[in-house]
Structures are given as structure tokens and as C-alpha cells.
Image (cartoon, rainbow, N blue to C red):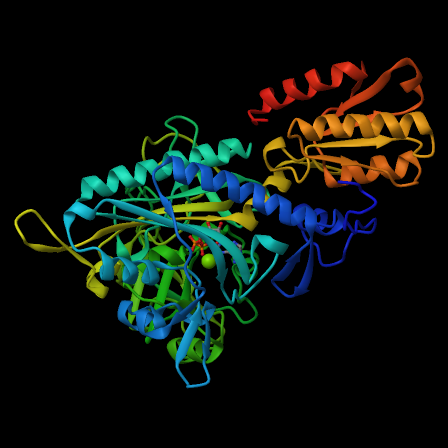
Length: 570
Ligand code: ATP
Ligand code: MG
């Protein structure tokens, strides 16, 4: 491809809306453009990267025995009503009606569609196991679309669904997908971890997220350096050792704290530390008002709360609800006398003696509060793990790091097959629900994750496996006959070998061409300059600082070696 013909609108300026490097570089390198918040159009380079990643995913899914199909994004509401998710999925689902007022949604995920397909076609154990997948566009009306294609309203997902007759069969299907995912992310040269993830109210025995380590990730991941335990913070249990109380219980007292509402205000007011306080947060959980109590310096883990309550929606209550529950303005909630349907108390609070809490009265706090003597609630693990906690598996030291979730594999069990009557008949003629698993990879988010891990101040540094083009040839002076002709010859030769080559035939200064080549991140640059008189060109890898001078007839060998090193076939 000639750069002069390529639709590659690069940008020098850093676009204002780009909050993170991958978003900035995808815009600047002309991979894509934004059409609306969370909605993007892919240009030639971006489109090629998408196809490259899809091809790797396809190869590995096929290798693992999954079969590709393609479903519609437009899904009738009846299927979702059967599974109970028409309401439960919530406002993230795009709902619409056709001209006959029939309700549809734009599929945010396809469990219902695949379950429906299977129940209509599969009758016997003889037809199972089966694993079907698609690479298809999903729609989610994200509350906060951000970070470019990392969290968008429309995105391409590879979603696979496995169908088995036994739990052991599901384990086999799950492990095959696990291995396939490792191969995919290895081939994409990502630095990732497969971590334990929440399986929600479904329970189930397995859910793993593939996390790409990155500071811009939206998930917190716990790692144990001793035993290798790795889990999403949402999931990681906190181990609390009951400690004996050596402080004497003092008499409960109500204290006027006129201007102190936040924990910081209170720390100043009482001249103490935040771990002496217990904060009480008020939530709306479906139709209930729920108070959750954790130590002042802790974060409530909403997933743990949600799982305990077995509710669909959980969100911090609005001001009015807080006022009704506490009979006070916001900032004075506490466990004593709170009007809530449930009071959940984090286990750590039981280890606190003479703590300070809100008094459910504007301008007042209680001091010397003690669990059991002064209040009681449902005790459990309701907070996020921190680096000061121990590994829940081995008791070792843990680290908390940020990660980008690029994939998720999940044992569904019979949740959908039971709800939608997807059964098989066994050897004895008895009917059972099919046992399912589901497996997703966000293709666009994976592009962003690759860029987050592979860029420098000049631009993207594509790994060979996902690069839009593999080699770029830069004749320094396109008007120089020998340079142009040699560049074209190299182009023809490499193209014939099956290499994806760009030739920068523009009549531009060399600096401009080098900057663009660096920005769009082509892995190999071959520069044809003055030394071509001596049959010498420059061979430079985007990821390396140094370049080397080689003879024209050594180009092929150098390219082949690089492809071998990178594990990419020619
Ligand atoms: P998140 O917690 O980030 O919202 P999710 O749990 O909703 O993700 P899944 O339903 O498991 O995601 O979807 C499978 C994969 O699809 C995710 O691992 C992710 O790579 C991708 N994905 C999900 N939502 C988006 C989005 N809004 N934009 C881009 N990719 C997404
Ligand atoms: Mg989501």
C-alpha cells in the first residue's frame, strides 16, 4: 500500500477528549474517529487491527473446537422476558420497537439467543457437548462511556457459549476456553493475569477475568506474591481475625459535632484517627433501604453487599431517603436507631472498642459505641480488601494493582437452560437442563489494552501480531530515482513473500515520514537513503532505539528472522 493513497488522517495535536494514552493515540494515528459519546468509526488502519485480532481469536477458538456462527444484534424481548433479564438487565440495555409495536433490544450479550437456538435444535445427549461462538457487535448504554473504545456503547465481542450434559463436562469446556484465552493473549503479547472474579448471585463454581496490567484499568486486582492467588477486589474475601479487646468499654455518650460531617472533619474534631470511626452508608437495594457499616477508613464492597442481599439494583440512597432513615441531614448516619430494612455490619467493626458513629441526629455523634451492647446487625464481609490485609488463601502479603478486563470466562450452570427450558434427554430417556458456560472477549478494548502496554512518547509500538502493516519502507528522497526504484523493488519482493508492507512515497521531508511511521507504530522500518549508492539501507525495529545498516540483499533474511522471533507466520 502506498502511503500517498492511504486514508490515514494523523494528528499532531493531542485531542482534548482523550483522557488516556490509547485513546489519544488511536485518534492521532488515524485509527478511528468519534461520532458521538461512546460511538466510534474505524478508519483503514484501525479496521485492519480489528481484523487481525479477530483472526487470532477465530483461529484459537476453532483450534479449541468451538464453531463460529453469527446471530442478529436485534433480539425480540420475549427471550429476555423468559430469562427474567428484560427488567433485570437495567438501563444499560437499548430497547426499541418496530412499526408493529413489537419490542426488541440491541443485544448487550447473547445468552438468551444461544440458549433459544440450542433448545430448538438439540434434543439428545448424543448431540452434546457443543461450543458455539460469534464475533459480533454488542450494544450497551453505558452510564459512563469513557476512555475511547475501552468503554463504549457499541463494541465488538467474541462471545462463546458451551453446552454440556454434566458438571465435569462443563469443567472440560471451561478449561479449554481458559487455555484458548491464554493462547490468544500470549499471541497478542499482552502482560495479563487470569484472576478470580465474582460470579454474582448465580453462584456457580467458576468465573475468571483476564486482566491486562495497566494504571488506566478500571478494576482493582489483588495479587499474592507467595501463593500466586489473584482475584478481582470485588471478589477477594477479607480475612478478619477476631482480636481480644484489651480496652475497657466506656459509657455511651452523645456529643455535639456541629460542623463535622465527613470522616476528615471528624478526625480533626476529635483529634484522633479514622480507624476509630465506623461509617454507615445508606443504600437503596431494589425496594429496600439498607445501611452498611464499615470502619471509617474502609470502602464498602457493593458486590459483596449485593450478593448477600440477592438484589438486582444497589445504589447509594438519595438525600431524601438518607434523611428519612436517619432523621438527620446527610453526614450523621449511625447504627443506633437507624430506620432501615437491614443493617449490615462489616466483621471488622466487631473488633472495634469505644468507636465513634453518627447519632442519627443533625449535629451529633455517639462516642464509646460498642457492638452488641449498643447495636446489632447482620455481620459479614462487606468491605474491599486492601494491601494491609493478608492473602485469603495463604495469609501472605498481597498487592493491589489496576487492571483492564479484556476477557471473562464464566460457568453459568443451568441458570438459562432452566429458565428457558433448554433440556436434553440422557441415556435413560430422562430429561435434564443443559449445563452452560459463557466466554467473552472485548475485541476493541483489547486494541486499547495493547496500545496501553505498547507505546512511547512518539506513538504506538504494535506487536507484530496485531500491527496494521508489518513493514514500512521509507525512501528519504522520493524524487531520487535510485532511492525510489530500490524502495519499490524491496516493496515488491516483501509483498510477494506475504509481508504486509507500506511504502511512504509522499514527497515529504524525511522527518515527517519518520514521525508518522513512529506514530502509527509499524514494527519494521526500512529506510532507503543516500547510502543506497553503496547498496546499504537502514533496518530499524520500532521497539528498539538503535538501527542497523544492512545490504539490500540481507533484508529478506532480517525480516524472516524478526517474524520467527515474534512467532508470526509468513
Ligand atoms: P465491565 O465490568 O468492564 O463493564 P462486563 O463485566 O460488563 O465488563 P462482560 O459482560 O463480561 O463485561 O463482557 C465481556 C467483555 O466485553 C469484557 O471482558 C470486555 O472486554 C468487553 N466489554 C464489556 N463492556 C464493554 C464496553 N462498554 N466497551 C468495550 N468493551 C466492553
Ligand atoms: Mg459492564
